[in-house]
Image 1 (tube, helix red, strand yellow):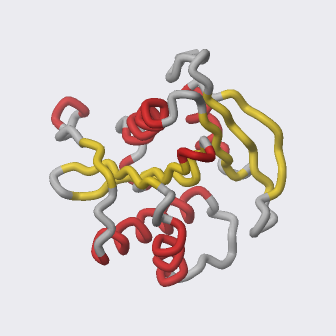
Image 2 (cartoon, one colour; image 1 turned 60 degrees about the vertical axis):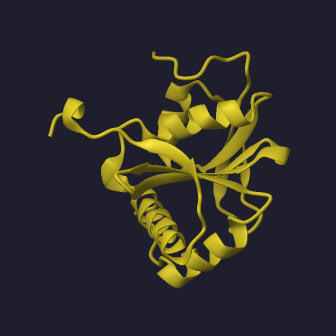
Length: 164
């Protein structure tokens, strides 16, 4: 199927039902595995579902990208903290504009600017964020896992999605 034949997707706010929560947990786990192939142990789906239940409620705003009723990607915003807490795309659906559309939505919902962190080992996500126009910041350690991560920032003075 060519790109022109792929049906359009749209963004919406999370509904939060049990079935949708399980779908989000599954996308999160599969995308995390794809980005962390060197990790020996991956938590079971119950771990990810618990995190959806505990981390995706208010004040978090969850935006999903869906096509024909199927959730393809999601983003978790903490608008008051000007922070994109999570952004994950179903691994086999990358490079279809889903991540870009979610970041565009973050720019709309947090027009004053926002930041995010990405694992230092996730070089494909780093390239994506840099192509989008985010400014790379300092490296630090995640407060819970201890894994190294890189900060990125978007401000309204930097137009998104620059090529080059």
